[in-house]
Image (cartoon, rainbow, N blue to C red; front, side, top):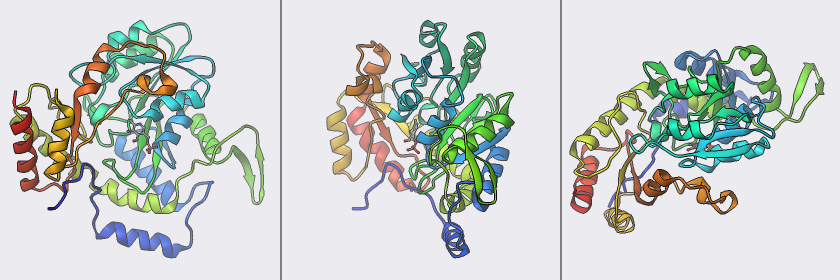
Length: 362
Ligand SMILES: Cc1ncc(COP(=O)(O)O)c(C=O)c1O
């Protein structure tokens, strides 16, 4: 039985060709930025319509780096708990304080009213997550950021190619953080990126480029200075080589994901499922199941891999504070994620739909 994977990168001969070219170039990585990495930054910035971009080694580093530019130390960041732990870790890496907001029960993105209630004088960043590629309400959240003199920094790990009101995710927030982990819509062995749109984007880029490579500045030949603590976060050439090919096919592959989501939305006979939104990049598709354990077992027995995204961060041992997030808690007990990757065949889709309806019929 051929297993249906939850995530599966889509590759062609082009990735292989470009990888071999990068390998033979003898130039594999450089902290100061190198050929393919610089090219990827430029092409991705153009694709999303961002002022500029800084490529890094993963999405966690992108969040860590972006928040280092946002006066977070001793201050507060509002974010959802239904996310990968990196979103929350990035606040702690920068010595900030986490304020978990609840989610909207339809989109599963951060709920604006819940976020509003958490605002204090110490709020510095509003940090929504585009859950599964579903665009968070960046208009309302952007207004909230403006009213509170904070920065809108979005976690766009699931949202490469997604749009909000016709504009690409990555062109709206002050900074947007992407992940190019192999499971993501734009896949690399490992990679991430900060898109910058704030007023002082040139200055911010310069600073982030330095922090991306151990805080190194003022390089002249072999001489350089270090004025503040940075990290080893730069992207390598192999990731960029693959990323450039993936970027060229991203829209085509996202369209396939959208068509899969359309089919699921139409044919799943379940009470609660991911809404249909043509602006979503459908990193996965979710449904709610009251008998999640049995449903996932049945799917696994049929060779269909499913996931749980996510156990909420505020329930993890290190983040437990007694915060009460009723919608997040209810949904996280029932959510099951299903594949939307473009390697799925029509037969795979039929099988997923039939098995889901048989078990979860409303
Ligand atoms: C919502 C979200 N944020 C951040 C990250 C971190 O990205 P990376 O794994 O590239 O560090 C991920 C990756 O899974 C994610 O799903």
